Length: 299
Image (cartoon, rainbow, N blue to C red; front, top):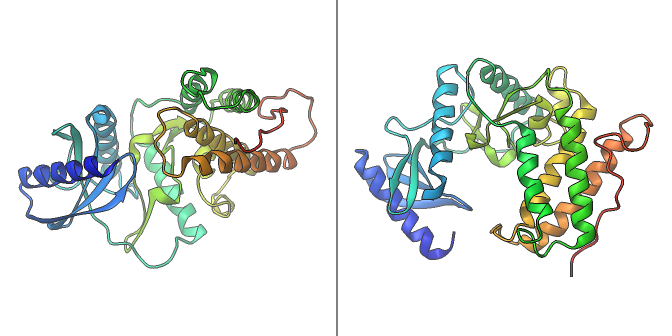
């Protein structure tokens, strides 16, 4: 958010916290991206503030958190008087604040948290989109020059072909699909005194566990029982294709977007190469193995 919106978001967070009955003497931004995270003290509550247009997403996230807390999942929980509230053009949810633990999460601990999270997700009933729905949304951005006007033609062809091939491969067999976190990269896993906790639950979707594992550092899947290494590599390539598609949207507001546009394609090409090396030779045109050359840096 820009500086003006951040100030307004902090004011909304403070007002919602006070309105919920919390003692709010100080409000400090701890994270700023498409949403703003504001620590409210001395009550020790974390307010997450998003534009009002994301109200449905915030309500969905709160519902996922409630259900997962009920079954003992390793997730960040809503504050006692949390829930989504609209205030001054923003939607605000109140969460428990967790002080960060020192160091990084060890791969084995990350994998153990995944095992417990996936087991908990299998225990709840929830309507959620499939991963391939996310692919379809990305393709709408890539295929329409009006939505991604700066994407060069060669890059558009490469990225669209990659998304179609990997999406088709992922959707071909849904027999092992289950509810997933959807984006459990390290930024969405807190290292706390209580152990790793998953946050940002609005990305919950359905698909194979490999899609979740592909968001984590590469060493993690080696500690996850029964993980299919080849499938994880394909999903890692798909993740970078999705990431690249979002960066080329005209409406994308990610900081340092130009660098991430270039680096996204570099990571995508590397992930595709790793995926191909891990698979046996197969007939050309197999889903998941796009053959178009990757684009160079846009100038």
